[in-house]
Image 1 (tube, helix red, strand yellow):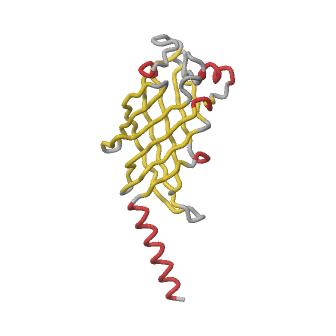
Image 2: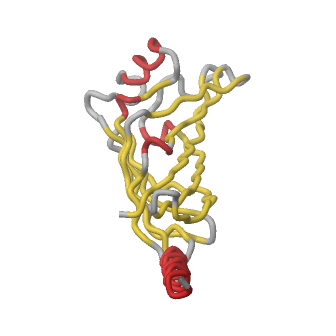
Length: 184
């Protein structure tokens, strides 16, 4: 009995140590969200998200060390079918010509994640603020990690110029990535 408890304790210690060494995680889309928020008429926010996305991220010593992801732009969802249709049109995302958005992390600086964001075929360096949630072992024995990344971008820099510099729609918008991953 004591040997069994000692073995179990040693395995737990080894699993905990492995978590602090890091891992590669596949984004668990059912527990993650890729969303945005933009000012409309400069008095309120319109929010939306994308239903289809994929990615991986690496954690080393309890810090995000790599991230890459792809978003299916046609999966945009603002809870308004007419608006979603307009967002897919050439005025905004131009889904027919640019079906995906991508992000690839290039480096980190303290809790800032810097990488290349591509929207409508235009790639720009973007800085996200990172909030690392940590790594755990779930009740089913899977290793999981969670984090939130937020950034503010100028949509017109990516060619999304509908109603640019107007009071109808702000040029700047917030991107929010709430990611939970399962170790590969």
